[in-house]
Each structure stands twice: as C-alpha cells, then as structure tokens.
Length: 225
Length: 210
Image (cartoon, rainbow over the protein chains, first blue to last red):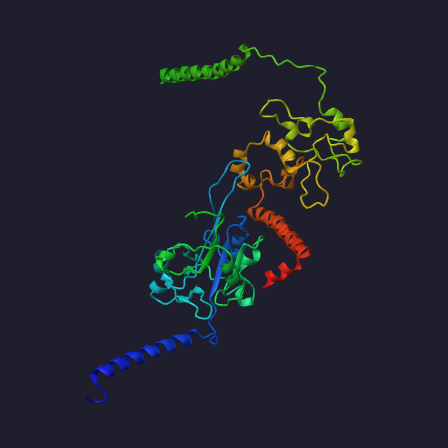
C-alpha cells in the first residue's frame, strides 16, 4: 500500500476543506472587523399622532413638488365609539431593502444601494424613466419626479439633512419622537436599542426583500394589514 | 304684407298680456295663506341682564378685559338650539348663574382652554365639553376634522376654538397652520413630560441618551 492512498487523500482533502471553511467564517465574525453603516428607521405607531408634520418637513427639505410624495402617513378608519375613538397611522415610504428589487431590475444602474450607508438611492442622471422600478416595488413608494422626469423616493435625506450631519427631516419634525433613525449595525445606536426593547414588525418580509423600515404596532394583538 | 304684420302684432300683444298676468298670479298666492306669529311686545331680552356688565359690543372703556368685555361677536347668539329650536342665549351655555358668580362661585360655566396652566380649571374637560356636545354632533365634527374624535373628552374645545370670536380662528385654516397646532401642543406636552422625568428620576434621562 502506498502512503497516499486514494481513500486517505479524499478524506484528507475533505477535512482540509472543512477546516478552512470554518476558519474563514470565524474570521468574518470577529468583532475587530468594522461593519459598514446599515441605516434603518423605526416608526412607533403607538406614539404617532398623525399630525403629518413629517410629510410637510420632507416636502420642504427635499423640494418634493405637490402631487407626489416621498412619505405618507396613512390614517386608518376610526375604531371605537365616541368619545373613545382611535385611529391608527402607518408610515408609507421607502423601506431601503437590503435585497432591493428596484435595484435588481434597473437597466441603467441608476437605482443603487449605497455601500457605505445601505441607503437605496437613485442617480437621476442615469435614470431613463422606464418605470421598471415603480412596477416592481412591492411597497409602491416610487414615483416619477415631475421636474426631473426620473424615478424618485425617500433616500433618508441622504443629500440634504444627512449631508449636513442632521437627522432626516421627518425625524426632526416629529413632535412626539415617534421616528427613530440610525445604524442597525451599531449595537449601541438608539435604533438598535429600541429594536431590542420593543415589539416590532416589518411588512411583506415573506417576499425576501429584507426591508429596513420597522414599525412598532399601534396596539397589542394581531397586526392589521 | 299688411295681414302678416297684423298677425304678428296680435301675437306680440297676447304674449305681452301673458307676461303681465303671470307674475301677478304668482304674487297673489302667498296672500291667501294666513300666517300669524305670536309675539310679546314687552318680552324680556334674556341677554340684557348679563349684558349690563358683560358688554355685547366693543366699548373703549371695557374692551380687552377677561370677562368677554367687547368680545361677543360669535355666531352663537344668532343661532337656535337644534334640540329645542329656541334661540341661544347666554344661559344656554353658561348655565344657572347666581349673584355669587361675581365672587367666583362655581355656578356659571366657565370655559377654560389653557391646558398648560398651573391652576386647575374650575370645570373639568368633561363638564365643559358636554355643553358643546349638546348641540355639536360628533358625526358632523368628524366630517369636518378627524382629530375631533381623538380629542373629544380629553381636551377642552376652547383650547383650539374661541367661543365668542369675530371669526373663529380655526375656520378656513390653512393645512400647514393646522399641522402647526398639533406640533405646538404635542411638542409642549413632550417637553413637559421629559422635564418631569428628569426631576423625578435623573437616571432615566441618562438611559435615554444611551
């Protein structure tokens, strides 16, 4: 018998592959490697009063023309009998999906995920207005900007407030602090702490888009969809 | 030619006569119906006694005071109560008033909209708003603005609405101004809540910052 039989070679290679596989994985998990920023937002529906100050602030900061909007607060029907009537409010805006279908379908590369922040944005110089992204977005948050004729949507104020080192306009405008914005890859950020502390939900997760807009339900019990 | 002209003249004359008689017939119709509204010549003006001190019209000497001096402008006095059909008077809303109300007795309904005042109001929100809701129907209020529903018995109507205004400052308000109202009031609430937390337990404030 030779020292390197076929049997020992195969088992040896298998062990080697196994070993290298695990070592590479453990290296990736090491805390020394700094993860990039992964911005996300949390809308606390139990704190939201539906005043729509966020909508006005967004329109003003990002110069969104009348008739279209990057952010909408959808008011539910009234629940309960007078004088104890309640409404629920839902934030309808870009979810900044980690697996964004709008980016996947874009034929020109205008729609992209910013690697440094995880923000899904549109390069309006590259956009040809084909509207594939509008059709594919399961959250129906995209529109054609009436001035630039390009696809547009919330970008967490990336080019306006964030560039100036401020929080997004909607977060700053909220009188009840119902909106929290921050880096979910930083375990000590305000949003990471809130995501741990509160019961939250995301919409349409079953589609595999991995959205980054979290909601705190307005009340206990099953979430109304 | 002549006969044609004559015919035309007669047609015109008939038409003219009809034009004259038609409105006359219409005018005579209501005269046939007898109507009689009983009126008391010396009927007491129910607001007169109040108006002796609380002037109904702006008055240089008295306007600007706390007690409605020169502030009665609103529509209330010109409307009728929908449940009784009778005209609205001071006592319809302000209730049973005795002489002691001048010394601050709790008999006259006092509407106080300042929810951030340090002094507790004489009448609770429920007591104040019950008066308004006796005429103003919740369904109608909801049609006007959904926010009526959520504030119904939690906030005095007088917090947003002026009760004897020349023009209610909430009427025809721009959408942006409306949002500002929400933001100002709820923002103030949040500020006070945070301050209270700070004074009660300084540790929680630090936890929030983290």
